[in-house]
Structure formats: C-alpha cells, structure tokens
Image (cartoon, rainbow, N blue to C red):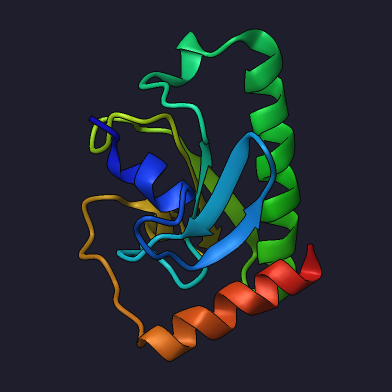
Length: 130
C-alpha cells in the first residue's frame, strides 16, 4: 500500500507544493508548528532516514538546504530549524520550521491552521524564490 507522503508527491493527494525534482518533494505542512513549516521527503518510500543510500541522503539534505534558504527569504524568522522525528509517518522526512524562539519547534505544542488561500500564496512565494 502506498503511504500518504508518496500519494502527496504523486499528486494523488493535493498539497501546497514548494519544490520538486525527480527524487525529492517539498510541501507546506498542513498542521504546522509555525507559518512556513515545510516537509521535505524523498519520493522513494524509505521509512528511516538512516536507511537511505549515502548519496541519496546527501542529496536530500542539499535539496532541503535550498528550500530552507527560500523559506527564510519569505517568512520573517531568525533561522529555519530542522527536525527529523520519523515516528508519525513511516516515510523519511525533514521538518523545516521557521524559528524566532526555541518554542517554535516544540512538537508538543498545538498545531496551527491557516486559510487555504494563505497557504497557497505562501507556497507560491517560497517556490518563486527557488
């Protein structure tokens, strides 16, 4: 059975896409910790980040770095934080979270919601920087 992130990357489930190439996909988290919270995934279904082939692992981080730099240009923040948890969805993924305080990347906090038109606009603005 195909997982939710693979279904998002294939377009079967709609998303607020930020960037994509033949191996990786980045999109806004629909339950973000902060405005501009992005998920970066490999298109290949790999549950555990450290099970990736070394070249793919390095390329994923290079892709994530480009996305993070674009997020920082668009979303007012001090830095873009990174988290890899991997327990909630069995598909390797990197969280890129705009930070102004340490609490901005606290996953036990209630998640935020933003109107669809605001999410679409933000995704387009970040994508345009790339």
